[in-house]
Length: 114
Image 1 (tube, rainbow, N blue to C red):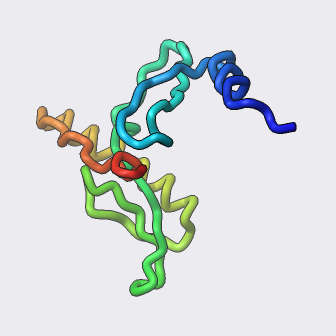
Image 2 (cartoon, rainbow, N blue to C red):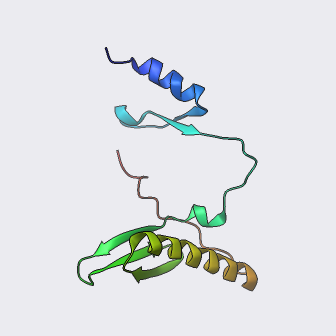
């Protein structure tokens, strides 16, 4: 017999997730987020959405972080993502060294879903 939604929600809460309220559609009224008190602060680079996608036109993988850079390219998607993260860290360091304000992260692909 399938578990009840309430039981699943309780399991999430027991695992350290907490409820946040959303508005709008019936399926998106509640969401659960984890908050683990490790004491570590999130890296600035984690605020910026990064991804790797295949370019059919160029026949190569493209790594993107549009809030900070236009992109980089490579043959191995895993290696490319690692390099993309390094480039983003370098860009952030450069901004800080120059005393420039970082652009606000605007790309949030899941923001408008649902």
